[in-house]
Image: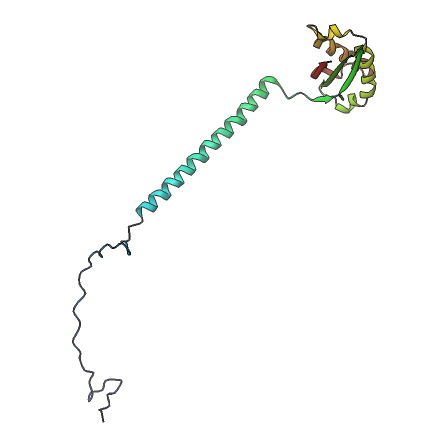
Length: 180
């Protein structure tokens, strides 16, 4: 029978001493292998991350500067030219001129300050009737000659003045004027 060794040392049964292993060797770099490449420090990844963050911040700063200058420029233009004109578009008209000729036109009225579009547009049917009469009497050759745009503007201004009242519009924009 084998002698029984206790789990805990007692004075009668001391723990046997085994020889100590050799101390660990100094750390040497591991040999490089195709299958197990040596770990590189993370400096490349850190540099790439920092450069990416700087590039992103530069792009955002450029975009912010561009947006700010665009808004500032549009405010400067509005200050020089005044506020954007308020328009009241009249319906498209196709007016027979006599013979086989006709004029196809689309105009917008530039409203005077403090005038609402409804003040003019509620008379658009009567204005259109007046334009059919006045423009229909004009010869087709006069509508293709120089100064025909001013002739058409004057006819529209006169029709608005007679039907809706004076002082409601400032100007007339001709959006389309085709003599066929």
